[in-house]
Amino acid sequence: MKSVVVTGVSTGIGFGATKVLTEAGFHVFGSVRKEADAERLKKEFGARFTPLLFDVTDEAAVDRAAAAVSEALKGETLSGLVNNAGIAVSGPLLDLDLDEFRTQMEVNVTGPLIVTRAFAPLLGADRSRKGAPGRIVNISSVSGVQGAPFLGPYSASKFALEGLSESLRRELLLYGIDVIVIGPGPVRTAIWDKAEEIDVTRYANSPYYPSLVKFRDYFLATGKAGLPPEALGRAILKALTVKRPSVRYAVVKGRLMNWTIPRLLPKRIVDRVIGKGTGLLKS
Image 1 (cartoon, helix red, strand yellow):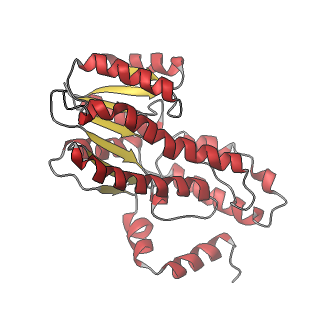
Image 2 (cartoon, one colour):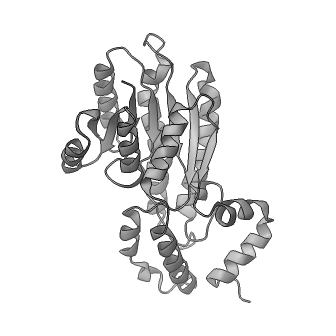
Image 3 (cartoon, helix red, strand yellow):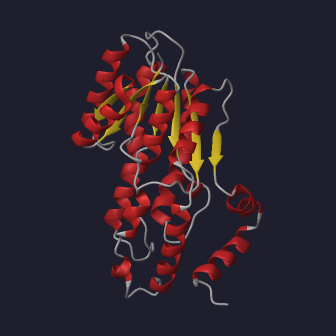
């Protein structure tokens, strides 16, 4: 049975990926941060799921999890690593608490590197292991290619992850370990319920406040109408199993308007459209 490590599986994309992968016959080692989530998912997914308890920024905990997976594999290679765990920090860049920005980068950029370094030997960097080299799938975002106002910290982290992935893909040619990026648009997950609870009134005295409220309302509506997590699970399965995977998959609902056209138009035109839509640019 092929085995895959997926980070951040308690809800959302990680949960959807675990569901699709276990149904496809994979054994999933899934990371969570709470014991209660580990117990819940064990009951949900049964024998094809093994929980790993760690935060992606905790090197010692990640190393312990890698050691446990290594023991379970009994000298075989790991078929895949899916770096999915992440957070989204929002707010005007001129007003944002810099500690929040640092946390965003630590979780979304340094975290995947910590996890990748810990599991790379199991994927084939340790040449003594038996089996074909595994693949790494890094979950980026549309925001890793197109920056939106008030999502600067998140977008910066995903742009960084895209660059990290490209460099890593080329470095890991040495071991035959491929690196594939999946960049989804909005996905229907619990993150949108959490986003509704974010208090934007702390920016009430900022000149950005009216535009921030308008953008938040639009963004929440778009997110709740997004793709189901299982759609991302199917894209992850494809990235892990097709003979010649693309280096990047854009999984976007309403692809023409939300992906193709914005990337073809001159950026100054897109700037004006966004500026007028949010009130950042007066008509």
